[in-house]
Length: 120
Figure 1 (cartoon, helix red, strand yellow):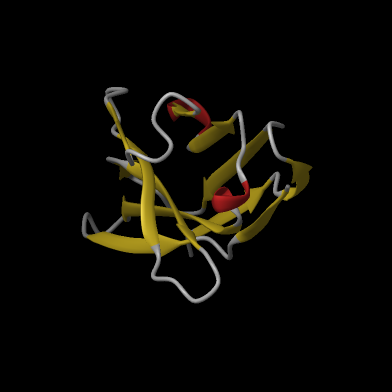
Figure 2 (cartoon, helix red, strand yellow):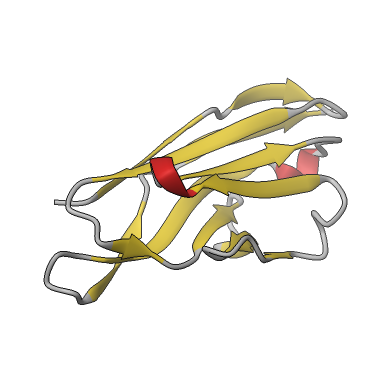
Protein backbone atom coordinates (compact mmCIF):
# COMPACT_ATOMS: atom_id res chain seq x y z
CA UNK A 1 0.00 0.00 0.00
CA UNK A 2 1.39 3.38 -1.05
CA UNK A 3 0.38 6.67 0.53
CA UNK A 4 1.10 10.32 -0.15
CA UNK A 5 0.79 12.44 2.97
CA UNK A 6 0.86 16.22 2.73
CA UNK A 7 1.53 18.79 5.43
CA UNK A 8 2.26 22.46 5.80
CA UNK A 9 -0.89 24.24 4.72
CA UNK A 10 -2.50 27.01 6.70
CA UNK A 11 -3.66 30.61 6.82
CA UNK A 12 -1.25 33.37 5.86
CA UNK A 13 -1.48 37.03 4.95
CA UNK A 14 -0.77 38.23 1.46
CA UNK A 15 2.96 38.54 0.92
CA UNK A 16 3.72 35.76 3.36
CA UNK A 17 5.25 32.33 2.85
CA UNK A 18 4.35 28.70 3.39
CA UNK A 19 6.19 25.46 2.78
CA UNK A 20 4.28 22.33 1.81
CA UNK A 21 5.66 18.81 2.15
CA UNK A 22 4.48 15.54 0.66
CA UNK A 23 5.98 12.22 1.69
CA UNK A 24 5.41 8.98 -0.19
CA UNK A 25 5.53 5.78 1.82
CA UNK A 26 4.87 2.09 1.27
CA UNK A 27 6.01 -0.49 -1.26
CA UNK A 28 7.80 1.83 -3.69
CA UNK A 29 10.19 0.73 -6.38
CA UNK A 30 10.71 4.14 -7.94
CA UNK A 31 9.11 7.54 -8.48
CA UNK A 32 9.66 9.45 -11.69
CA UNK A 33 8.10 12.89 -11.41
CA UNK A 34 6.22 14.45 -8.50
CA UNK A 35 3.76 17.30 -8.83
CA UNK A 36 1.70 19.81 -6.90
CA UNK A 37 -1.79 20.70 -8.07
CA UNK A 38 -4.27 23.11 -6.54
CA UNK A 39 -8.00 23.58 -6.72
CA UNK A 40 -9.65 26.87 -5.87
CA UNK A 41 -13.35 27.02 -4.94
CA UNK A 42 -15.48 26.67 -8.06
CA UNK A 43 -12.48 26.07 -10.32
CA UNK A 44 -10.84 23.07 -11.92
CA UNK A 45 -7.76 21.48 -10.46
CA UNK A 46 -4.64 22.94 -12.06
CA UNK A 47 -0.98 21.97 -12.18
CA UNK A 48 1.19 24.26 -10.08
CA UNK A 49 4.65 22.71 -10.35
CA UNK A 50 6.37 19.47 -11.31
CA UNK A 51 9.82 18.00 -10.72
CA UNK A 52 11.34 14.87 -12.17
CA UNK A 53 13.80 12.51 -10.55
CA UNK A 54 16.71 14.40 -12.09
CA UNK A 55 15.58 17.71 -10.65
CA UNK A 56 14.16 19.35 -13.77
CA UNK A 57 11.20 21.57 -12.94
CA UNK A 58 8.14 23.11 -14.57
CA UNK A 59 5.88 25.81 -13.16
CA UNK A 60 2.55 27.35 -13.96
CA UNK A 61 3.00 30.87 -15.25
CA UNK A 62 1.05 32.32 -12.33
CA UNK A 63 3.54 31.02 -9.74
CA UNK A 64 6.83 31.26 -11.63
CA UNK A 65 9.36 33.27 -9.66
CA UNK A 66 7.38 32.93 -6.41
CA UNK A 67 7.14 29.16 -5.85
CA UNK A 68 9.98 26.64 -5.76
CA UNK A 69 9.51 22.88 -6.01
CA UNK A 70 12.21 20.55 -4.73
CA UNK A 71 12.53 16.93 -3.69
CA UNK A 72 14.55 14.60 -1.53
CA UNK A 73 14.76 11.34 -3.46
CA UNK A 74 16.16 9.44 -0.49
CA UNK A 75 13.06 10.36 1.53
CA UNK A 76 10.57 10.12 -1.38
CA UNK A 77 9.48 13.61 -0.40
CA UNK A 78 8.58 16.64 -2.47
CA UNK A 79 8.37 20.21 -1.19
CA UNK A 80 6.73 23.40 -2.39
CA UNK A 81 8.15 26.64 -1.05
CA UNK A 82 5.59 29.37 -1.64
CA UNK A 83 6.69 32.99 -1.28
CA UNK A 84 4.96 36.31 -1.97
CA UNK A 85 1.61 34.60 -1.59
CA UNK A 86 -1.48 36.23 -3.08
CA UNK A 87 -5.18 35.72 -2.31
CA UNK A 88 -5.47 34.03 -5.74
CA UNK A 89 -3.18 31.27 -4.42
CA UNK A 90 -5.93 30.17 -2.04
CA UNK A 91 -7.11 26.61 -2.55
CA UNK A 92 -6.57 22.99 -1.67
CA UNK A 93 -3.12 21.82 -2.70
CA UNK A 94 -2.66 18.19 -3.74
CA UNK A 95 0.47 16.15 -4.21
CA UNK A 96 0.51 13.71 -7.14
CA UNK A 97 2.97 11.08 -8.30
CA UNK A 98 2.98 8.05 -10.59
CA UNK A 99 4.73 5.44 -8.48
CA UNK A 100 6.25 2.15 -9.58
CA UNK A 101 5.24 -0.64 -7.25
CA UNK A 102 6.92 -3.93 -6.53
CA UNK A 103 5.06 -5.47 -9.49
CA UNK A 104 6.97 -2.97 -11.67
CA UNK A 105 3.75 -1.30 -12.82
CA UNK A 106 3.10 2.44 -12.40
CA UNK A 107 0.09 3.56 -10.40
CA UNK A 108 -1.12 7.15 -10.03
CA UNK A 109 -1.42 8.39 -6.44
CA UNK A 110 -2.87 11.55 -4.91
CA UNK A 111 -2.50 12.99 -1.46
CA UNK A 112 -5.48 13.96 0.65
CA UNK A 113 -4.97 17.67 0.07
CA UNK A 114 -3.93 20.51 2.34
CA UNK A 115 -5.74 23.84 2.57
CA UNK A 116 -3.87 27.06 1.83
CA UNK A 117 -5.70 30.30 2.57
CA UNK A 118 -4.18 33.68 1.77
CA UNK A 119 -5.93 36.67 3.27
CA UNK A 120 -5.75 40.14 1.74
